Image 1: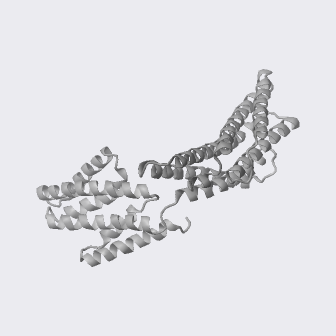
Image 2: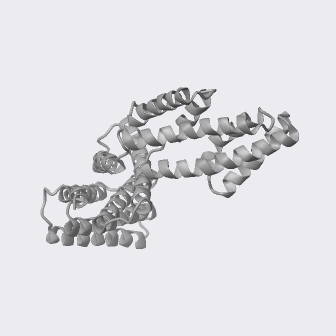
Image 3: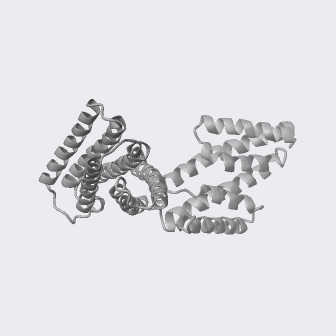
Length: 343
């Protein structure tokens, strides 16, 4: 784990919560600090959503805890029963992320055996911590998933480029292959999460502009294309080397993969406004991709040894090429995603 803005903001949120508790002369401050830690979220929308959800579930949990304390005092079995009820309600309301802080509120309220003043104090401590995290998150280094997404996209593409260019040539060390592939898998998963954050911020906080919606479509296709490239690597690992191959066939696969990653590279340069649209290159690429798959299917029809495995790999390569064609059309008609965000 590396030091980042979220770690810094979590510490600042805890500090703000503790100072607020001291200023309001409430105790114990520990509850506010714990709530602030749980409440730090990776996007503005999720911070707002978490604040609203926690307000609802904490009030509900405090009320149930106060009633449970009045009826059953602070018996351990009663505390556990109320916790179960609160968990069920949170899950039913699809607010599972709020369970941790809500249960802390429930347990602390039931400690006072139903005294409403004590319950209000404990509820206030939790809400102060949650509100502190929200304030820090929107004021100090606000989350910028788009900037992170663009940087991660380029890093992931560089890893994919290295792996695809050496996938069948046996040039790269096996330890490096596994390390780079795990890193690429992590990057693709991280990109999927960051895409969800961007989609939530754009669609749920406010009505997006047309240019912003178009930009989101580009980011989605970039991710889909990277994911398909990763699936090609998986197919090669599982099937390609288990099939009987000639030197000529290895050369054909290697050449086609080189062409694909070069086309992918040109598309990314178009998004950076460094290359002009090139319809001839796109047409030639589509024809070569169709021809490559047809040739592999013909081999399978001839019952050549290992052709079925090679056909599986070929189908994955063809699908990667199809996604590249879609991404290229977006690049030719949309310009750079960064420029769109400035419209």
